[in-house]
Image 1 (tube, rainbow, N blue to C red):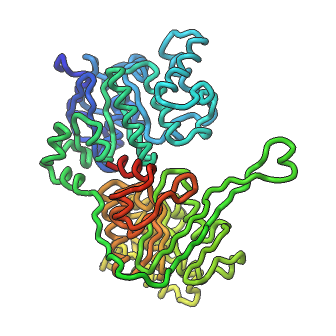
Image 2 (cartoon, helix red, strand yellow):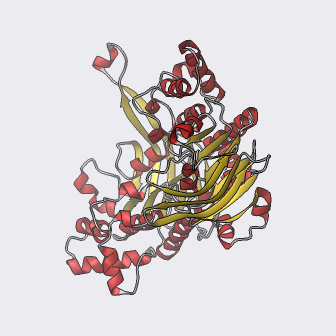
Image 3 (tube, rainbow, N blue to C red):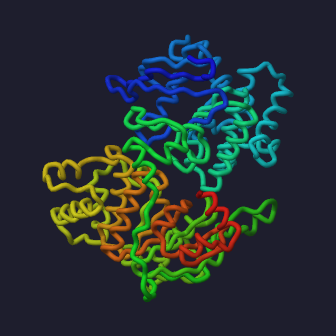
Length: 532
């Protein structure tokens, strides 16, 4: 280990039972350096980082990981426990699951400080507020008494960073610290990490599949595929001239626009005028006994979608875009005018059956939207039992197999197809599960799909594949899409028109090339610039 190296990893291997998932990898990190560990889900990047602190449960480790001259993998547990949090800290991917829901943010940070330092009780409380203020949380003294569910996603991530920095570590392991955040929040968290890294002089190992973040943040990049390090080097050099085919594929995985441009407007398939969605809220004091207040989630939204057109709804969490999608699906009561092929949603659910056949939905997370207790055949064919009950079991099975082939999950081998039909969602990858969700929506031949963040949970290469599938289906079937997303690159690749929403209001709308290249509203400019 050289004098200029903080962490030196040699021959690190990780196995679970008889399955080796990380294969003898080498890398090093210098003091104050920013290094990105890049790869798709299953590449081994997260388990490699967890293994450095021996946090990967039931893992068998091999090799060496020298930190300041000591081998972390051979260190006695009581000595390693002192290193965790004090010398090497970690930011986990999903703060809502990493934070204790029964403890306030302040108490969780104070617990770390009490374990690792000898600060007095009064000084602990003061230090907690200082740490929250340093990470940019507004009203830090008040937020210290808040529970995780009372903070926004960005605030929870900042609280996690405050906890990780509590003992001023020399090395910070940041595991996908921005994955669950909106595009502008991603930029804010990244800028915060850079500022704190420079002010504290610590090294950072960023684990991510977001290449835009890597380009902006890292000095060096390490690329992993299937448990192997396939390429490493200076970030600028790797991006300019990637050597390994996998790295080339990652860098080339940015969504590509391949849609049919509309020639002239036709009668709109979906029409909304002055759409308004209101949630009732309790009023404080005696007023709440007699009446309720209201929270306006969507105010005055108007748009139309032609056959074969994609309308993108862009905005951050809380902007009202998903609420607008639910209203368009007839799942939320709304005020104003909303028509699908000239018909409005009815308060009588039975009367909406025909409309439901015309408009289907693909949700953000296929793992939670697909029943874990139903087979592929049951999931994909479920809509037929409602909209085509006259079909025989054999006819339904034939349509299910056709739908699976349409989304790239079919095969000509009859035995293999029969096995696929009897599999369950957990037996598929994330991209395959999203294809199942699309097949389920398509099987009843709808005219429109509402796509609610359809690729946000996917790796970049899988995201590109799913977008290409959606583009292909639109060209072949003339489908219309209402696309909900905060990803500007997805809007640029898929949409004909775009609505930008903020705080429930449409702040800008127009053709996609006009809005993204010449944004008029300050908020739109922020979103576009944050996307890089």
